[in-house]
Length: 516
Image (cartoon, rainbow, N blue to C red; front, top):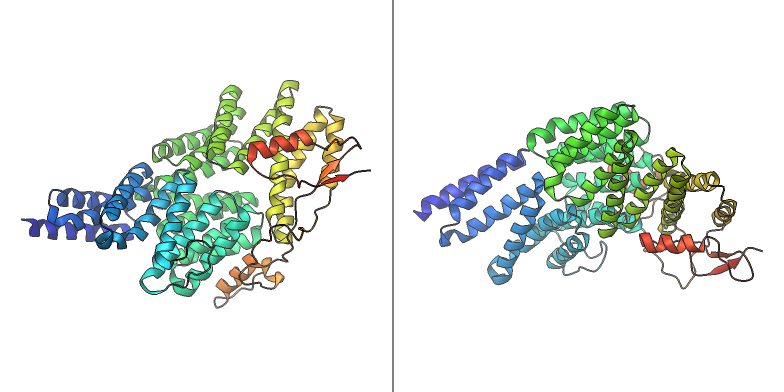
C-alpha cells in the first residue's frame, strides 16, 4: 500500500514542481498539499512527506501566505536539527525560503540570521559581505540565492552603503557562476540606484534585469522588475509607461495568485490615479490592494500602503482618519527598526498638515518636518561615493529640507530659519583618519560609465556593473555641531537630538565648531 502511495506522492510533487515552474503557484500549492496529506499517515514515507511540506511552504510564501510558510519551515528545521546527519542537507534551501518570508513580514534580524547561517553552511564563511563565496558545483545556486536575499534585506532596511556592497557582490557571484540567473541580482542593483536618485543607471539595469528574467522564464521575477520600472517611470514623469507596465504585471500576477505583487501594482496604479486628480479611483485601488495584502503578514508593504491610504483620505477631507493612519504607519516603521521610513512618513504627514494652513497644523508640521529632514539629509554622509552623495542631496534631501525651511518661514520662526541656514552651509569634512573607513568597491571602474553605460549586447552586463559601482570614493564625516555663542549654544541642538532619538540616524558629528 505504501509503495502505491509513494508513487502517487512522487507524481503529485513532480506535477506541482512543473506547475510552479510554469508560473502557476496556486495550482502547485494544491498539488503539494495533496502530496503532503497522502504521505503523512505513513512513517515509511517521512522523507517524501518532508519534501512535500517544503514545496508547499515555498508555494505558500510565493502566494503571500507568509505565516503559514514560516510555521512550516520552522517545523522542517526542527526535524533537520533532530536528525542532522540524514536531513542536514536540506537546511540551506529551507533557511533561504524561511528568510524570504521573514523578510516580507518585517522580521529583518531573523531573516539576516537565517541567511548568515545558510552562507556558513555553504561556504564556512558567514562574516563578510561577499568575500569567500567562490563555492561552485552543487552549492552554487543556493549560495547565489542567499547572497541576493542578503542584499534584499539591506535594501528593505534602506542601509544604502551596505546594500550597494551586497548587491554588487551578489551580482558578481551570479554572473560568474550562473549568468542565466542574473535577473534578480540585477534588479536589486537597479533598486538601490533608483532609491538613491540615480535614475539613468537604474533604468539601464532594470531593463537588463527584465530581459534576463524573461529569457530565464522567471515570470514572478519579471513582475518584480516591471514594478521597479513602473516606480522609475512615475518618478521621472512618464505615468503612461508606468501604467502600461503595471497592467502587464496584473495580467500575470492576478491569475497566478501572486497577491503581494498584485497588491503592489494596484497601490502604484492608485498613486498614479491620485496624481491625475482621480481621488475616488485611487481610494478604490488602495482598498483592493489592502484587502489582498492584509492576510499575508507582509507588514512593511502593508505599512507603505497605509501611508498611501492616509494621503487619499486627507485629500478627501477625512483628516482625522488620515492623521490616525499616518501615526500608525510611523509607529509601525519604528517597531520594525526602519527609522528612515519613519522619517519619510513624518515628512508626508508634515506636507499634508502644511496644506491646511491653520497655525496649530503648521506648528505640528514643523515639529515633524525639521528632525525628519535632518535625518534624511544625513543619509548622504554614509555614502562613500561623492556622486551618490550629490544625487541623494538633489533627489531626496533637498525636497525634505525645502519643506522644513518653508514651514519655519510660514510659522515666522526667524531664529529657526537662521539656524537651518547655518547648518546647511556647514562644510562636509573628509572622514578623520581615526574614523571607520568603508570597504572599497570590489571593482573600481571609470566614472564615465555611471551616467552613460555603453550599449551593445556583448558588454551590457559589464557596463551595468561598472555603472553601478563607478564613482570617486572619498569617505566623509557628518558635519560638526555648530556653536552659535561662546556660551556653548549649538545650532538646532534640540532638533538634532530629537532626530537621532526618533530615527536612529547620526545627524551630526560630535565635534563642535564656532560660527564666529
